Image 1 (cartoon, rainbow, N blue to C red):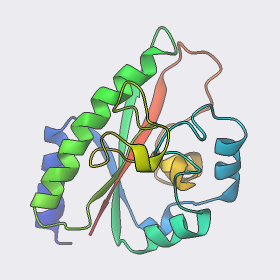
Image 2 (cartoon, rainbow, N blue to C red; image 1 turned 90 degrees about the vertical axis):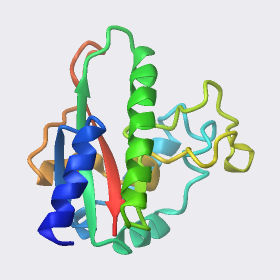
Image 3 (cartoon, rainbow, N blue to C red; image 1 turned 120 degrees about the horizontal axis):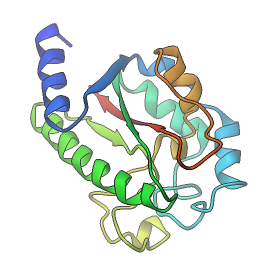
Image 4 (spheres, one colour; image 1 turned 30 degrees about the horizontal axis):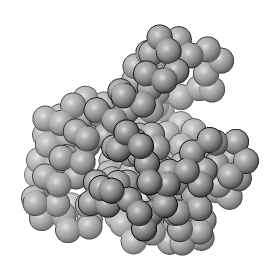
Length: 181
């Protein structure tokens, strides 16, 4: 990817509300089995969201997926919410903007453009729960965690902020990944 194409991609990202981003070699994206275990034994979305495990590929296949790319943009978004349930409305709005970004990147000639949402897919108000029954399959995307990405370890390599939150009023630092080739 030339500097000119990187500049154009970054311009597109800024136009879609991505003011803070970092480029990463997908080989540096940390994929770990423990992330899948946290999904399986700790997340209420497990088995209830069509873009979450067990509807996502096995961990090894996720790792192989990232190796098919030479570059990824890590997109940082931060906010505070008063009530935990407000998170999904915020992430839905951001993810819809990011879907348009993914489309623009694709139309710019990056045929393998693929977005990982910054949170579990909440495009539909009520998820069908299984990939085969998804009402919006062209818009649905997994979150990095659904692809077994250790977001904490990955973004810390880039010097980006992320901490475990102890209170819902604390600032959330959320990350979407845009795979480009």
